[in-house]
Amino acid sequence: MSDRFDLEQQILEAWKVTDDIRTVLDHGAEEDMVENFKALARLSDIRFEKLWYIFEQMCAGRQFTDTVAEEEPSGQSD
Figure 1 (cartoon, rainbow, N blue to C red):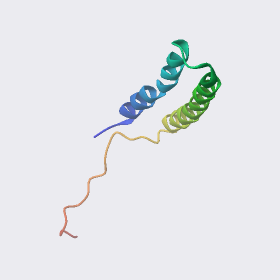
Figure 2 (figure 1 turned 120 degrees about the vertical axis):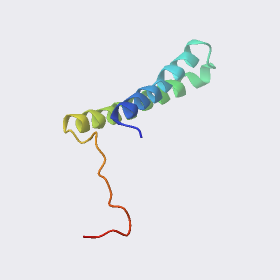
Figure 3 (figure 1 turned 30 degrees about the vertical axis):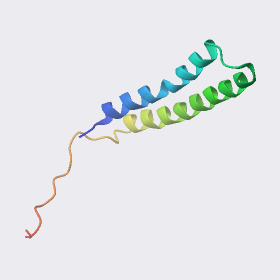
């Protein structure tokens, strides 16, 4: 089962897309596409900044738990 640290790592890994876009720009994107790539990179940064803010707020609010509630076996009652 994944935990908040796995989620954190996946957020950071996905954020690398903005670096990928900038790499394309640095290595010869066609002139007419440069502004589109810059806008896409900025939009992606904004989205990840919002996502990271929410993640940090959830961590600060201790909304992640390390335990999973155990369910009663089916068919058993008190």
